[in-house]
Length: 263
Image (cartoon, rainbow, N blue to C red; front, side, top):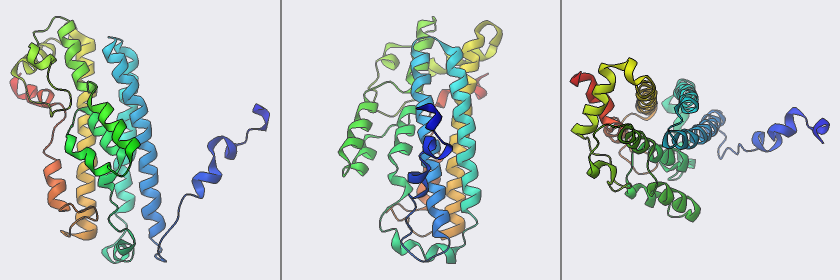
Protein backbone atom coordinates (compact mmCIF):
# COMPACT_ATOMS: atom_id res chain seq x y z
CA UNK A 1 0.00 0.00 0.00
CA UNK A 2 1.33 3.45 -0.94
CA UNK A 3 0.43 4.93 2.44
CA UNK A 4 2.79 2.44 4.09
CA UNK A 5 5.76 3.64 2.07
CA UNK A 6 8.30 5.68 4.01
CA UNK A 7 11.32 7.66 2.87
CA UNK A 8 13.60 4.88 4.11
CA UNK A 9 11.63 2.03 2.61
CA UNK A 10 11.19 3.70 -0.79
CA UNK A 11 14.93 4.35 -1.07
CA UNK A 12 15.87 1.00 0.51
CA UNK A 13 18.12 2.92 2.88
CA UNK A 14 18.63 -0.02 5.22
CA UNK A 15 20.53 -1.85 2.50
CA UNK A 16 22.28 1.18 1.06
CA UNK A 17 23.56 2.43 4.40
CA UNK A 18 24.61 -1.06 5.45
CA UNK A 19 26.66 -1.58 2.28
CA UNK A 20 29.89 -0.05 3.64
CA UNK A 21 32.24 -2.70 4.99
CA UNK A 22 35.68 -1.26 5.81
CA UNK A 23 38.49 -3.81 5.84
CA UNK A 24 40.80 -1.78 8.04
CA UNK A 25 40.67 0.49 11.07
CA UNK A 26 41.70 3.47 8.91
CA UNK A 27 39.40 6.45 9.44
CA UNK A 28 39.49 7.41 5.74
CA UNK A 29 38.35 4.05 4.42
CA UNK A 30 34.72 5.11 4.88
CA UNK A 31 35.39 8.09 2.61
CA UNK A 32 37.06 5.85 0.04
CA UNK A 33 34.15 3.41 -0.03
CA UNK A 34 31.35 5.98 -0.14
CA UNK A 35 32.93 8.06 -2.92
CA UNK A 36 33.24 4.98 -5.11
CA UNK A 37 29.77 3.65 -4.27
CA UNK A 38 28.20 7.04 -5.00
CA UNK A 39 30.09 7.19 -8.29
CA UNK A 40 28.65 3.83 -9.30
CA UNK A 41 25.13 5.15 -8.63
CA UNK A 42 25.77 8.19 -10.84
CA UNK A 43 27.15 5.86 -13.52
CA UNK A 44 23.97 3.81 -13.30
CA UNK A 45 21.94 6.94 -14.00
CA UNK A 46 24.23 7.89 -16.89
CA UNK A 47 23.76 4.47 -18.49
CA UNK A 48 19.99 4.64 -17.99
CA UNK A 49 19.86 7.98 -19.82
CA UNK A 50 22.36 7.12 -22.55
CA UNK A 51 20.57 3.92 -23.56
CA UNK A 52 17.29 5.81 -23.89
CA UNK A 53 18.96 8.72 -25.72
CA UNK A 54 20.49 6.30 -28.23
CA UNK A 55 17.06 4.86 -28.95
CA UNK A 56 15.69 8.36 -29.53
CA UNK A 57 18.54 9.28 -31.88
CA UNK A 58 18.01 6.05 -33.84
CA UNK A 59 14.32 6.96 -34.17
CA UNK A 60 15.13 10.57 -35.21
CA UNK A 61 13.31 11.78 -32.12
CA UNK A 62 15.90 14.24 -30.91
CA UNK A 63 14.05 16.51 -28.49
CA UNK A 64 13.76 13.89 -25.71
CA UNK A 65 17.36 12.86 -26.39
CA UNK A 66 18.55 16.40 -25.70
CA UNK A 67 17.06 16.34 -22.21
CA UNK A 68 18.60 12.94 -21.48
CA UNK A 69 22.04 13.97 -22.73
CA UNK A 70 21.91 17.21 -20.75
CA UNK A 71 21.07 15.19 -17.63
CA UNK A 72 24.07 12.91 -18.24
CA UNK A 73 26.32 15.98 -18.45
CA UNK A 74 24.96 17.18 -15.08
CA UNK A 75 25.53 13.73 -13.58
CA UNK A 76 29.07 13.78 -14.94
CA UNK A 77 29.60 17.01 -13.01
CA UNK A 78 28.78 15.11 -9.83
CA UNK A 79 31.31 12.45 -10.79
CA UNK A 80 33.95 15.10 -11.42
CA UNK A 81 33.29 16.77 -8.07
CA UNK A 82 33.71 13.44 -6.28
CA UNK A 83 37.46 13.69 -6.96
CA UNK A 84 37.53 16.90 -4.91
CA UNK A 85 36.21 14.98 -1.92
CA UNK A 86 38.51 12.01 -2.41
CA UNK A 87 41.53 14.28 -2.79
CA UNK A 88 41.23 15.22 0.89
CA UNK A 89 42.88 11.86 1.52
CA UNK A 90 46.64 12.18 2.01
CA UNK A 91 49.29 9.66 0.93
CA UNK A 92 49.58 8.53 4.56
CA UNK A 93 45.80 8.02 4.80
CA UNK A 94 45.73 5.94 1.62
CA UNK A 95 48.74 3.85 2.64
CA UNK A 96 46.68 2.51 5.56
CA UNK A 97 43.96 1.33 3.16
CA UNK A 98 45.86 0.15 0.11
CA UNK A 99 47.06 -3.22 1.53
CA UNK A 100 43.40 -4.17 2.05
CA UNK A 101 42.36 -3.47 -1.57
CA UNK A 102 44.15 -6.45 -3.09
CA UNK A 103 44.01 -6.08 -6.88
CA UNK A 104 40.66 -4.33 -6.87
CA UNK A 105 40.58 -1.11 -8.89
CA UNK A 106 38.13 1.33 -10.42
CA UNK A 107 39.67 0.14 -13.70
CA UNK A 108 37.51 -2.97 -13.16
CA UNK A 109 34.19 -1.10 -12.93
CA UNK A 110 31.73 -2.78 -15.35
CA UNK A 111 29.59 0.35 -15.49
CA UNK A 112 32.54 2.58 -16.37
CA UNK A 113 33.44 0.17 -19.16
CA UNK A 114 29.83 0.05 -20.35
CA UNK A 115 29.68 3.86 -20.50
CA UNK A 116 32.88 3.92 -22.56
CA UNK A 117 31.41 1.34 -24.93
CA UNK A 118 28.10 3.22 -25.22
CA UNK A 119 29.89 6.43 -26.14
CA UNK A 120 32.04 4.60 -28.68
CA UNK A 121 35.33 4.04 -26.84
CA UNK A 122 35.45 0.38 -27.74
CA UNK A 123 38.25 -2.07 -27.08
CA UNK A 124 37.28 -5.74 -26.96
CA UNK A 125 40.39 -6.54 -24.91
CA UNK A 126 38.82 -4.69 -21.98
CA UNK A 127 36.07 -7.29 -21.75
CA UNK A 128 38.60 -9.84 -20.48
CA UNK A 129 39.07 -7.76 -17.32
CA UNK A 130 35.67 -9.03 -16.22
CA UNK A 131 36.11 -12.72 -17.12
CA UNK A 132 35.25 -13.75 -13.55
CA UNK A 133 31.77 -12.22 -14.02
CA UNK A 134 30.01 -14.03 -16.89
CA UNK A 135 26.93 -11.79 -16.78
CA UNK A 136 29.09 -8.69 -17.13
CA UNK A 137 31.02 -10.23 -20.03
CA UNK A 138 27.74 -11.07 -21.77
CA UNK A 139 26.42 -7.54 -21.28
CA UNK A 140 29.62 -5.94 -22.61
CA UNK A 141 29.74 -8.30 -25.59
CA UNK A 142 26.12 -7.47 -26.36
CA UNK A 143 26.95 -3.76 -26.24
CA UNK A 144 29.85 -4.27 -28.66
CA UNK A 145 27.34 -5.73 -31.12
CA UNK A 146 25.16 -2.59 -30.99
CA UNK A 147 25.83 0.78 -32.61
CA UNK A 148 27.31 3.27 -30.16
CA UNK A 149 25.53 6.55 -29.56
CA UNK A 150 27.95 8.16 -32.04
CA UNK A 151 27.28 5.44 -34.63
CA UNK A 152 23.58 6.28 -34.35
CA UNK A 153 24.30 10.01 -34.68
CA UNK A 154 26.33 9.44 -37.86
CA UNK A 155 23.67 7.09 -39.26
CA UNK A 156 21.14 9.84 -38.65
CA UNK A 157 23.29 12.24 -40.69
CA UNK A 158 23.14 9.75 -43.57
CA UNK A 159 19.35 9.45 -43.31
CA UNK A 160 19.11 13.25 -43.35
CA UNK A 161 20.92 13.32 -46.70
CA UNK A 162 24.54 13.92 -45.76
CA UNK A 163 27.16 12.02 -47.76
CA UNK A 164 28.36 9.36 -45.33
CA UNK A 165 30.31 6.55 -47.06
CA UNK A 166 29.13 2.94 -46.81
CA UNK A 167 32.43 1.93 -45.21
CA UNK A 168 31.59 4.22 -42.29
CA UNK A 169 27.99 3.06 -42.00
CA UNK A 170 28.95 -0.62 -42.29
CA UNK A 171 32.07 -0.53 -40.14
CA UNK A 172 32.62 -3.33 -37.55
CA UNK A 173 30.79 -2.03 -34.48
CA UNK A 174 33.17 -3.57 -31.95
CA UNK A 175 36.19 -1.72 -33.33
CA UNK A 176 37.57 1.66 -32.32
CA UNK A 177 36.08 4.52 -34.34
CA UNK A 178 38.42 5.75 -37.08
CA UNK A 179 38.19 9.43 -37.97
CA UNK A 180 36.48 10.05 -41.31
CA UNK A 181 36.96 13.10 -43.54
CA UNK A 182 33.43 12.59 -44.87
CA UNK A 183 31.92 12.62 -41.39
CA UNK A 184 33.89 15.76 -40.54
CA UNK A 185 32.62 17.38 -43.75
CA UNK A 186 29.02 16.58 -42.76
CA UNK A 187 29.45 18.14 -39.31
CA UNK A 188 31.20 21.12 -40.92
CA UNK A 189 28.17 21.74 -43.12
CA UNK A 190 25.98 21.70 -40.02
CA UNK A 191 28.25 24.00 -38.06
CA UNK A 192 28.52 26.50 -40.92
CA UNK A 193 24.75 26.88 -41.11
CA UNK A 194 23.21 26.01 -37.72
CA UNK A 195 19.85 27.60 -38.56
CA UNK A 196 19.33 25.16 -41.42
CA UNK A 197 20.21 22.13 -39.30
CA UNK A 198 19.39 23.30 -35.79
CA UNK A 199 18.50 19.96 -34.19
CA UNK A 200 21.62 18.27 -35.61
CA UNK A 201 23.70 21.25 -34.46
CA UNK A 202 22.25 20.86 -30.96
CA UNK A 203 22.89 17.11 -31.04
CA UNK A 204 26.52 17.77 -31.94
CA UNK A 205 26.93 20.19 -29.05
CA UNK A 206 25.28 17.78 -26.59
CA UNK A 207 27.77 15.10 -27.67
CA UNK A 208 30.66 17.53 -27.30
CA UNK A 209 29.42 18.23 -23.76
CA UNK A 210 29.59 14.51 -22.96
CA UNK A 211 33.13 14.25 -24.30
CA UNK A 212 34.21 17.40 -22.47
CA UNK A 213 32.86 16.21 -19.12
CA UNK A 214 34.18 12.68 -19.59
CA UNK A 215 37.65 14.05 -20.22
CA UNK A 216 37.37 16.34 -17.17
CA UNK A 217 36.44 13.25 -15.14
CA UNK A 218 39.46 11.38 -16.48
CA UNK A 219 41.71 14.36 -15.75
CA UNK A 220 40.33 14.62 -12.21
CA UNK A 221 41.10 10.93 -11.74
CA UNK A 222 44.64 11.41 -12.99
CA UNK A 223 45.36 14.39 -10.73
CA UNK A 224 43.79 12.72 -7.69
CA UNK A 225 45.87 9.59 -8.20
CA UNK A 226 48.98 11.70 -8.76
CA UNK A 227 48.27 13.63 -5.55
CA UNK A 228 47.65 10.57 -3.40
CA UNK A 229 50.01 7.86 -4.70
CA UNK A 230 52.37 9.72 -7.00
CA UNK A 231 53.69 7.48 -9.77
CA UNK A 232 53.20 4.10 -8.09
CA UNK A 233 51.50 1.35 -10.08
CA UNK A 234 47.72 1.10 -9.71
CA UNK A 235 46.16 -1.63 -7.58
CA UNK A 236 44.60 -3.13 -10.72
CA UNK A 237 48.02 -3.61 -12.31
CA UNK A 238 48.05 -0.53 -14.57
CA UNK A 239 50.98 1.87 -14.65
CA UNK A 240 48.93 4.37 -12.70
CA UNK A 241 49.43 7.99 -13.77
CA UNK A 242 51.14 7.16 -17.12
CA UNK A 243 48.19 4.90 -18.02
CA UNK A 244 45.69 7.64 -17.15
CA UNK A 245 47.67 10.15 -19.23
CA UNK A 246 47.36 7.81 -22.21
CA UNK A 247 43.61 7.42 -21.74
CA UNK A 248 43.23 11.21 -21.84
CA UNK A 249 44.30 11.15 -25.50
CA UNK A 250 41.41 8.90 -26.50
CA UNK A 251 38.48 10.77 -28.11
CA UNK A 252 34.96 9.38 -28.56
CA UNK A 253 33.82 11.79 -31.28
CA UNK A 254 36.98 12.86 -33.15
CA UNK A 255 35.21 14.66 -36.00
CA UNK A 256 33.32 16.88 -33.56
CA UNK A 257 36.69 18.10 -32.30
CA UNK A 258 38.51 18.35 -35.62
CA UNK A 259 35.57 20.17 -37.25
CA UNK A 260 36.38 23.18 -35.08
CA UNK A 261 39.64 23.52 -36.97
CA UNK A 262 38.00 22.78 -40.32
CA UNK A 263 35.47 25.58 -40.08
